[in-house]
Length: 316
Image (cartoon, rainbow, N blue to C red; front, side, top):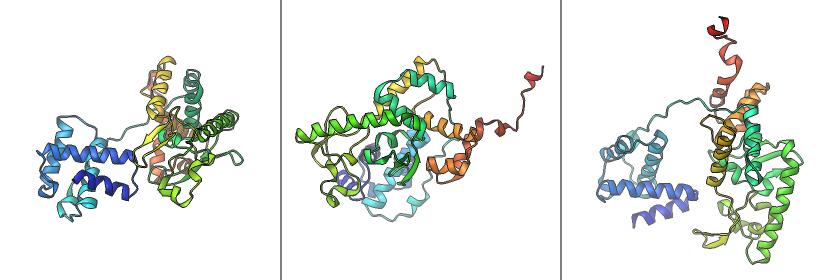
């Protein structure tokens, strides 16, 4: 079956479970859109019709169109192994340039006051270390370096590792939190569990690593879950949806009328560092941006970004 071949190829290339789910969804939808015609019998016209229907009939964002296209290209290049000239000519949707939403320092304090427990600690890491949502939730105990006051982000966007800062103010809370994680892990081991997912088949290279505290998630889920790939019962990290809902609720309770989210903390981290005089190259490294031009967008809120211009209404 074609979808089974897609799944096997994705796992062979060690893609994430989220990518597997997304690619299978879009490939299935692409085939059904064309009345179950086999992809080997299609051409660029079929792809364009499918993407156009997504944009016009379903009004999906450019990023969603591009994800669907990536899934289709994966099907042709990696599964069907068809070197078709028209595949190279399919154009991706152009993403609109948007300015990031940024919280002020006082707004962030107000939001933190509305959060508690793990959600507050995670939000403080998102802002204090400039982490993306999933980078935060995928942190392992061994990624926190209290001695050097830094956080190691492994396999971030673009499959790159990087270091970022660990805020002094949250170290006591984080140390206490990790002590609770350790107690939970010991209980899991006593109950016959205690394994955790390891990336890139490290569990085969280091046989006992998946039961070590170092590899346990900093934010473990309250419940054990069944891993479809390994067919083992493990403790995964908390759901991103729970944290997203908590942050959204905190923004509403703080009466902040901005279209903010968990990612807004990362935008605020970069902007506030630049405001405090940090070098833009340093901020680029902390964020893990490949190109400094991506980091430059955060200068939009700085006074120097407007050349110190005063609005004419203020001169009246």
